[in-house]
Length: 132
Image 1 (cartoon, rainbow, N blue to C red):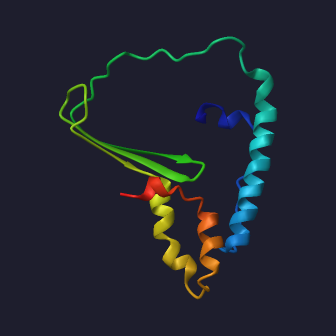
Image 2: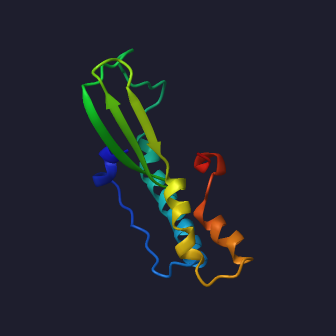
């Protein structure tokens, strides 16, 4: 998707409140921006089947590799250690939910226990994702 960023118009969504309402407002405006992006691109989607051409087996170069990408819930990272074969020696995924949950203590300071439901709801957590 990054290839077309320069060809579309959108606004980065920012709120400075840091509370549940601010996170809600960001989510709502992100949806409006997403609809605007879709409207800009929908007429340019080619018709018919589309499939990227990839090699059946990739040989990984020897060494360590870390990459991250922004997702709907935050930053997603992949860490790979390779010995130069076709399968990684070690691979670790860092999902956004794990990072988001680690901020809960800071976000909840001074809040009532009943507020935790709303605070956690605005973090958009997927519990199996953070159960390690």
